[in-house]
Length: 469
Ligand SMILES: [Zn+2]
Image 1 (cartoon, helix red, strand yellow):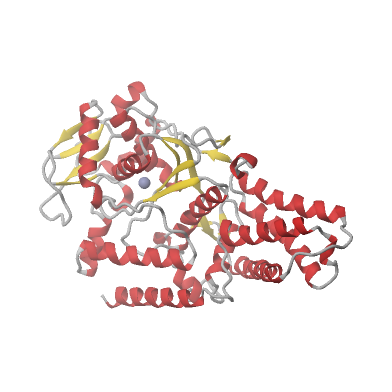
Image 2 (tube, rainbow, N blue to C red):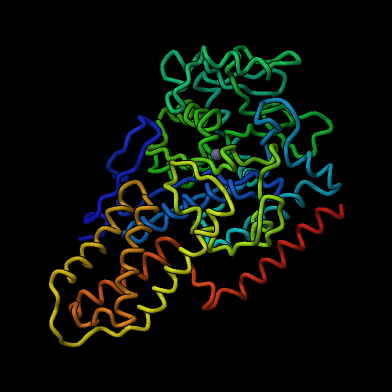
């Protein structure tokens, strides 16, 4: 019996807003798509939290025996400032500012993103496709959408026809927004005379001006794909017209994910995603962490302790542990004290891990059946907590309980042979696997420090290059 049958996973589906039994379309295969970064600046800690959520999802599903194809894209064109349909491309804007090629911006911040992933021990996705690498496929999807009557061209741009879509489908079903309510919010974006027939329509292809640096030839003239389009295209290409899990930060629910659904249905007629998962925000003193509010930490600043809100620096695994202390759907508030507590907690766990790794299975002795079954029950509990919508804080609480047992064995408060050999073997394997493999917490004392130094060096190099330009 596979572990995933033994411990069936329940996922909170944003579509329908309730926990549902996770049943992949083609087990043991699981298709997971996560919206990756727009590589125009360095990822801050709030971004990291979102990617960590899906790192945990893919790690745990793999651990249960699923074969996960994890696709996380790189947005390297098409994401306009203010996330709207008008304005400059974020990457082009940065390229003009730093006076280098847009693709140099893309390379630089993609490298930086990968370096941060490495420091925090985020696993690489199976496929990391880029928007610029899929222009042909994006043009094809626009053509399908037009052919099906859900898109129209105006002056070299193509818009998705939300009104037409609404006749048959429900635009807003994921975010719970009603099209009528969007009018107020959208009005601000309609300055300068819109080409749209309807205020809620959105660009799937945007005609380029002469000054646009990145643009491609298309049936509608030179232009760039709309921001939402790439995810529809790349998820379909690598995971199929329907796939299991689509993840992203809560702020992507609308308009980005709502538009993805509309595009996929508009092009292929199928609702693309079975389980939508959205991670909550990281807050600082109760306010969302964001670059524009000036309260965002770069991972490097946090590690170095180089920020006015910080008393000291914290190690990457302390930060990882801190972020895992909240369930992904809850907000987590950043503070020095919370990080100091996380530092202690992380050390307690890794210490217990080191201790049990050195212990040998007991031979003979009088087994205390109560303790024996308690330990087996706690080991099972780890799976039950993780299978309950990836509840990392409860999992960590159980690990602490098990850690206390390890300490009692280590300092001879309880003789090790008061549990059976089988129980010990199961205990040792489960405890160490949950820490290292499922939660991805590395031992920073034993190894890993070389890797860390290399990456830090690179991040510092990147940062000094930014400021010198
Ligand atoms: Zn996306």
